[in-house]
Image 1 (spheres, helix red, strand yellow):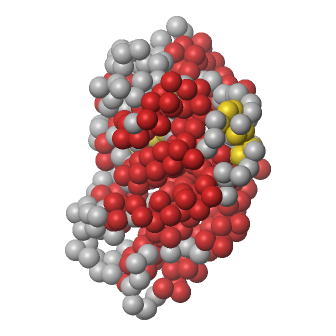
Image 2 (cartoon, rainbow, N blue to C red):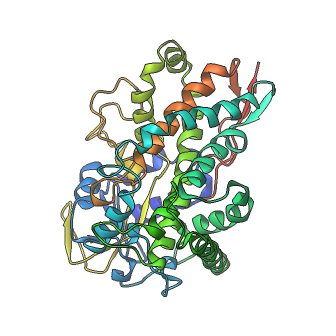
Length: 406
């Protein structure tokens, strides 16, 4: 396959008309594991090459290292969150945040949330069981994780209508192609990012000097650990990242899970009989229909050789995680949804130093949500298949998922 053909394939993947089923295009893209695009960027689509890059210290997550920075640098004065930094700055900030979120300092935090998660899911399902038709996104998959992340961060749940629009505009900016992207979308995304940061800075100021509460904002504002204390700008950037990533990806994971299980009634029937198989079912969902399909805006620190292709220093690199998850060179029968799959080192949460910070929580949320939902719904069936999809090719999932109970 020529570079021009590979470039054309990737542009078709980005087109919204391909959102419902990009997997045939991913298979086409994998014929050229490393494809140079017309704008000078590179797209990597095979499992081994993606995994190698995610563990390669010469791959930068800091967009300042791009020769042609995109909209992620539209506000150069921002202090980036640790997801957009490289070691050692990344390691320090991630370690400081993890001190209050998980091992080694808070090893039981996620597991101790289980009763609260069950209670939230139960309340949501109680409002669904009497309905003939349910929108899984609006009625269940969105309110569940957003309630959880608001509780963890210390963001008032009643403020959700304020930040919902900001988050949507920020996510939309992730998909902007520098060659064809809408300046208006970039402008709206920048404005939304500034509004969200101002809002979080106000919340942070309200926690200053008070006894540290259980929420993450209070702890970061008042607690000095071995690495000292984050600056206000670093706390706001961290909270911004966790608020967005803490619910946007989980909405997709739960919604894609409902859609996939309804498309595979044999697996759904087994799950109802054997609820303990939910753990490996969610792992297979993370491979088969992951919530994050692309990692854009990576940069080459230096010249990189990947699959016999030299990627010059400063080049933009896009990693197509969802394509790697369906790579037949690594996964046997990759287009089959198989919760009994034994070897499942998927890329659903990425890999390397940027492995998803909230992966343990997202896993638990999806396990509880799917088990409880299908235990309580009466003979659910899809109203439309495929459902309408969100615009984003990065965070891919249905905009709505209508389910009717018989």
